[in-house]
Each structure stands twice: as structure tokens, then as C-alpha cells.
Length: 98
Image (cartoon, rainbow, N blue to C red; front, side, top):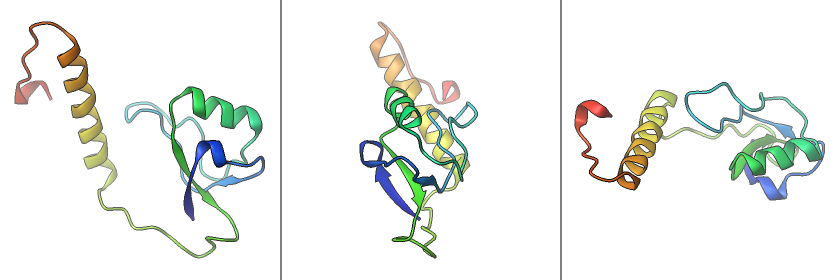
């Protein structure tokens, strides 16, 4: 399995992992799905920069995750909240709000 930029995806590439646009919603596409031109376009529109694919080049390679899924989800949620808060006037970030 290897990570490739969405603009480098080719029709027929097989996704190696589920593709999420946000941590709190179901995946856009599931692992094992073959990429079509319309899927690639939809991933770009959703702001997905890169995806994991299974192909002959990366056969037998299983990348290690540095952070578990829950930690990634919490970090993403916190960063998103802080960015939205900074954009709003007079917003104070408290630990309980995150």
C-alpha cells in the first residue's frame, strides 16, 4: 500500500483504505473501491489531497500509523474548532470547548 496524491490517481487504481473528508462523517469511499474519473473529481472537490492505494508497486507493504484513529479524530476536531473560533470575533477557546 502506498499514498498518492489525488491528482496522480489513475482510473482503475484500488483504494487501500477508507477515504474520509471529515472525522465525524462516514467515509466518502471504502477500501477496495476502484477509482473512476468521477470519483477522482469528487475527491478533489471534497478537499482530499492524498489517498492510500493497493497496487503492484506496494504489494505486501502495510504502512504503520503513528497515531491511532481516535487521536487523529480528536486532533482534527480541535484544530477545526480553533480555526473557526479564530475567524469569529471575540471567541475564547477553553479546554472544555474542545
